[in-house]
Image (cartoon, rainbow, N blue to C red; front, side, top):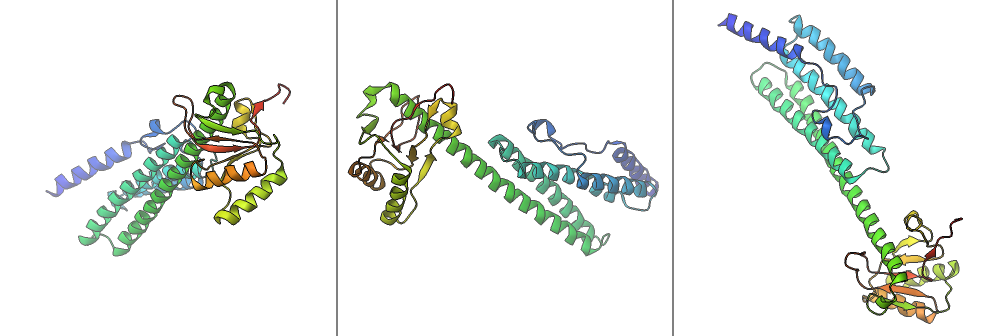
Length: 293
């Protein structure tokens, strides 16, 4: 029996040692091309060095085989953490990239939970000290916090992307109105007023709105934006306010603007196949950007 156990142990050691150390996350093919595990990350370098030291000690019989397996998991954890850190400093993280980071964090939780269960079994069997399991518990708790952070980041990135889609729809709706006068009175209401809207008008409007509703004027686009420029329209001196024209805030805003002869477009509905986003555009209609702009 002892010979069989020794033989099986030798086979297991040979199998584990014969495997190359992980160079990237297990599902690296699914990671977007902008996000790659950083092999030069200090944590990754140290984890690889420890793994090699443990491999030698296990091979010499100075440490049990499970130590090498744990060391390999730590290398994989370091690689995954390098991905999570990359996403933290990216200001233009895409929703699909944020979702991938959730997958990476989930993978870390599963790996550390598995390690914790294995450690607890060995502690129960009297093979390891209880402090070993406590360390694994702390690692598992950290992995869960990383997962919570990744989920929160993914939710925020998706909200930002959704806001961008809404803003694009709003800008497109304004542009479509320029070439569809038949939409007047159906899709939008246009008040020409004096044709002028100044920065001083905006300051007074913001103050009066706050006094009336005890909240800030919900401006969704102020002046020139990259989105309007990309669509070829000059939005300087205009603001878009994210209120529904037929709700109390929208009705108050339209009456206010008319009383001060400030021009506006009040968009009440989406245009199927064109754009979405009911809002009130304060100021003259957007004009085409000059080629020299």
